[in-house]
Length: 410
Image (cartoon, rainbow, N blue to C red; front, side, top):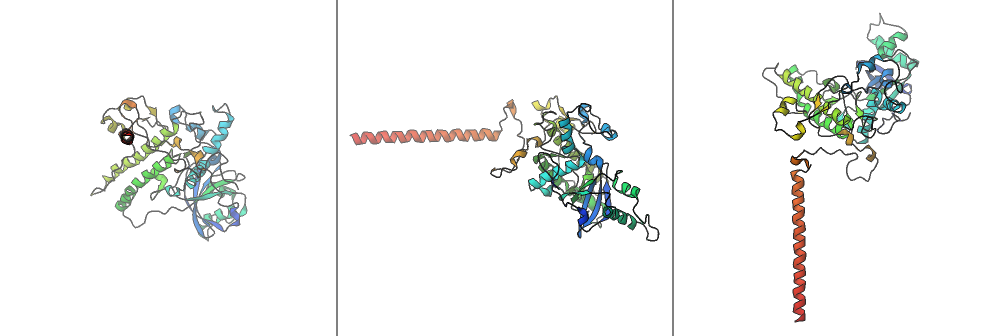
């Protein structure tokens, strides 16, 4: 099978063309959500976490934004496929959304980008995608065997395959449709012998590295859009189901949404991370003596900004933070990195001196709005001095030549 999605930009390779040709079995259920279920698999003697996406996870794009007056509830309640004109988009835009904004394809593209840039350490490792035929007897039996193992041998839940059992296990009610999944490393959980105090301290100690990784994702052209503590397992990011990756139909090149969309979503990621930090401040008060909280700021809130010296960019008006399911407030300052600036076309250019698609950090604004930092001014001064020195040397050289000529003539 070919890499997916069939869309410009990053893609995820296939893990295997046919899972039934391998020795595999279902070992446990790990959790799930609206569009996916995560199972513990054993494939050819190795343990993996396999995230299985139901039909909605591959056919229902999550694209609405609250700040634009778009209600995300409509996405969940609308069982009909998107239609050109009815949903406010052309057919070509709808086709693009189906390939860059559905849960399955969001994960494929994000993991594909990390593989392109050799930055797979930023999240739990993904090995590729699989395609399950739910009508295949071997696939059906693997789920039924696991389900039976949860019941006593004398009182099995079902002695043979029952259609409704598999439907409930994978949350898919039409078994004739193929189910796609992504094979990942099984993220280890924290040691079980830790006390609640030690466990929470471990969680807080991991946050500085997690924040650095979020910045690296933004530099890689990826926004998470739904950042929560539950997306991490012992410090590792395990969920990209809402992530958008450059190139995207809503990026500046697409011209459909404003140019600041990805920058705003990056700011939202940092605000969500700051909410995680703030919740820690509340929790540490429950311990005696108090825990050590790392000095960490992901996003400055309005109260902190109000105490700072006024700057022209703080007067407003401000652009909204683009959350898909709620009013997240306003972007009163910029994130360090704008994912939309990622140059995805440069990834294939091996002759580039800098790392492919590098996104540079936003320069701090200066007085007068000229956009020059003190460092730049210092550099210009040094260049001017250098030119003056060279000019002086040339003049002295010419004077020496004239004196030499006069001496010879005499």
